Image 1: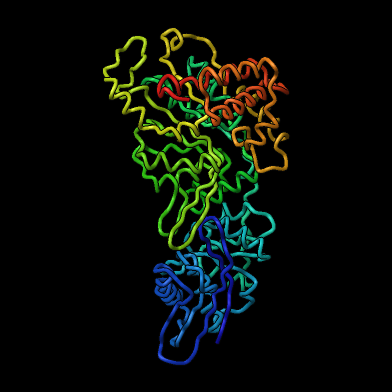
Image 2: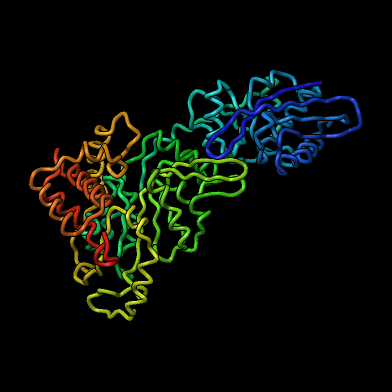
Amino acid sequence: MFAKVKSLGIFGLNAFEVTVECDISRGLPRFDIVGLPDAVVKESRERVRASMKNCHLEFPVSRITVNIAPADIKKEGALYDLPVFVSILKASGQIKGDTEAYAYIGELSLDGEIRRVNGVLPMLIEAKNKGIKSVFIPFDNALEGGVLEGIEALPVKNVFEVMQHISGEKSVAPAKSENLIDREITYDVDFSDVKGQSEAKRALEIAAAGGHNCLMIGPPGSGKSMLAKRIPTILPDMSFDEKLETTMIYSIAGDIPDGQAIIDKRPFRSPHHTVSAQALTGGGSSPKPGEISLAHNGVIFMDEFPEFDRRAKESMRQPLEDGIVNISRTAGSVSYPSNIILIAAMNPCPCGFYGHPTKECSCTDAAKKRYMDKISGPILDRIDIHIEVAPVEYEQLSGKGNEEKSEEIKKRVNKARSIQQKRFEGTNVSCNAKMTPRMTKEFCILSDDANELLKASFEKLGLSARAYDKILRIARTIADLDGAEDIEISHIAEALQYRSLDRKYWNKV
């Protein structure tokens, strides 16, 4: 007796179709699973056997061989429990109906309940691409399963619901999550909470408008973390494609919040400075997304930036440059997207009070140099905007003045981003910070006065080629915020200010 059912697998961000074949033949009782299974898949033999017994179904006392194809791809996880269970029932004649019309995903408990699994959304997308019309998924994955149109995700709590639906006794309603996809986005924080710091707010507005990375330098208590946590409130709303791509990453990581169908807020990740390089970029024997990929389409905030392990900081180079994290393991290579805005914050010295107007710095010159040298030139080069965050004066903290709300700043950011969308239409570039050198030359047209200022600054400050490009891109974003066609002298002058801290703290540009 032979049966065949469909399932799906996942490696990295890529899902693939799987066929689960079951052969029941005469011979000494034995249950084998082949097809390059890992230890968890092999253990499904005991889960399936116990589930059948406790559900009062007959486990065949025969030679059972289950093949999970294709055999050259390693199968991982407990999501194959349900398809193995259904294939045995079909091969042994205990289930009626067309089992091949569906695909099956789910982990079994010993009493026949179906438990949630990770990666359901990318697997459903692959099923849709392969022409599979219906997929049984765990009930706990129903919300993310209902995001897609054009495929039926059938959420089931136990194996009896699967059997009844296949036999036609009782149908399972497809998952639907439309009312959760376009919900209103609200935040508990707002830029109006921050008193003063107009220069830092302006720099972060430019960073949000152009997708630029930003480094904030200031003493403890000046508001660096407070400012960083409010950046998502001024970023443009996510498109559906961005939501879907981000949700796929969170689905694989098993990090979709309870009661939420889709990731509709731009992610804000804030790893502790003790994070390892592997936790930051992702990895493991079966590579999983790290903090950088979990921040895709959003912000990663690295507070106390010099205190991060050097290997962890250096691992940011490729993601910041290419927008992709490549992870290579013996099992294979995977790529996770990392279209992020890096916001880093640090003190100006180990004690934090170098340059403070009222508190004296207790650090030696050698200690300050060691502290600043923890940030390498290549990493510093990849951060577009460098801004000093000064201590807030008492009058600003105690004043009754109304600070600008995030909503107002976001309107200007949206306007600038819409200009960029039209500019880069038909390309894979989403914002000014991601422009290629050719695009920078094409779209960063300077007025005569602006060109003269940049030329004089380049010669006087000894700017590098990379710094030159970054100044042009920042100036382009400032011009977009002003609605200007060309880059004027005021835009270049402001952009140059955001590169002056290289010389002050590191004596380089």
